[in-house]
Image (cartoon, rainbow, N blue to C red):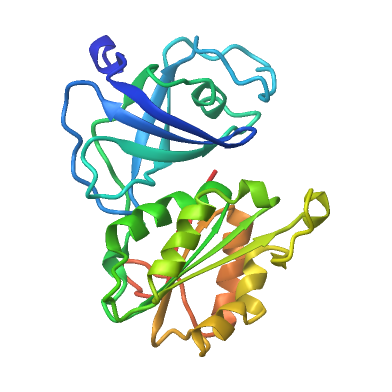
Length: 272
């Protein structure tokens, strides 16, 4: 990459702290148009290795090589939005870039890749299929883009988000998703926390892991029927261990993983 290409070309226009080390950030290009993208795709962010690290981050064992540190992040903003891209990020303590992104403030500059990519979209789900989107942590990000771009009060298909986190305060976008659920009869939002004993106020929702929301029948009860391969496609995003376990559980219900040569009903995006 040339020096010119590595120069900061975007600016932070909004930052929301969800909880310590978990944040939502909006990035706008500085003087160049955003490319069009499909909901579910990702962009690349970058900061120089000399950028400061978040106080929650672990010390680096060895100094990073001089230059730009770049990583891909799923876009959370609507594909109809052309002024900024939004990202949902957690500070990975041992990570190279997220501890540096966590130190950014409004007005700070960073590098934004000019190309947006990714195959984790609704393109391979039939128009009549119901859509179940299952996520851990920041794996929710692509679903926010999908919902903000595609959710319509008149849609005949059903949408559901099943989101799992350690604590209730880590359930990002919760208020927006609850509002979506109130406004859109076809949308269902279910959550689970895995460490309810740490809640300052007793947690009255589901507990355990997000995959338990599928196996417990919580979604079946809300929809009035058991989702099946003939009528539903399932999207999985986040922790690879969750994804592998969900693929197994879904396989017991007749779902199979989708690929270009072997179409199926399970669509996967693994984080880290």
